[in-house]
Amino acid sequence: MHENVVFLGPSLELSVAQEILPACYLPPAARGDIPHIVANGGVRVICLIDGVFFQECAVGHREILAAIKSGVMVFGSSSMGALRASELDTLGMKGIGEIYRRYKTGEIISDDEVALVYDPETWISLSVPLVNIRYTIEEGIKEKVISEESGIIILKSSQSLYYPERTYPRVLSLIQGRIPQPELSRFSEYIKKGGKDLKRMDAIMAITAVRDYHLSLV
Image (cartoon, rainbow, N blue to C red; front, side, top):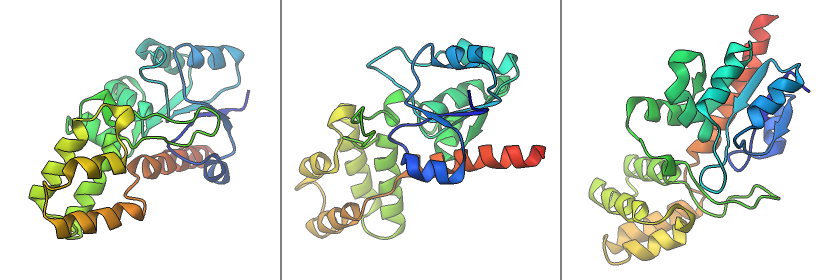
């Protein structure tokens, strides 16, 4: 087993991650995956980015704590990793990124902020996580694309959707006629450019942090 293990899925393209850090990249983590790789030996760092949520049993807190107790450094960021790090950072897990910070401070609390559906073969996202929609709204307000009042309407409309149904076309259909047409048009063009991907930004930050952690040991 490679000394670096990263659980990665739709948060970041594998090719981008590999350019930053040589590692064993595994699909989103489920219950039992971390104990399995620790038992195989040779692992020094685990970076938990993506993990399963509702379709399978999620990564357990005790699994992470057992890995830390065995001497493995565990980083968490972006998705399931950010959520678990916010719960276990006082016990040795290292949280990285803005999503981790928001969970830690209580700005966001629900698991479904980072949940999405994706193609299990390609890891391509098929829905948009609420945390990315939220961040896109915040940046849109800063850039004068939409008003704060419209931002509240867009966010509440997004929250009303079950996480697999959260796509930008679906959100736009819900806010039609509820915010001024010029703002709707600007917001539509804004998200056509890709919106803001906070999960991707945090995943890059976490993988870079693992690389820098190893450099600090040299």
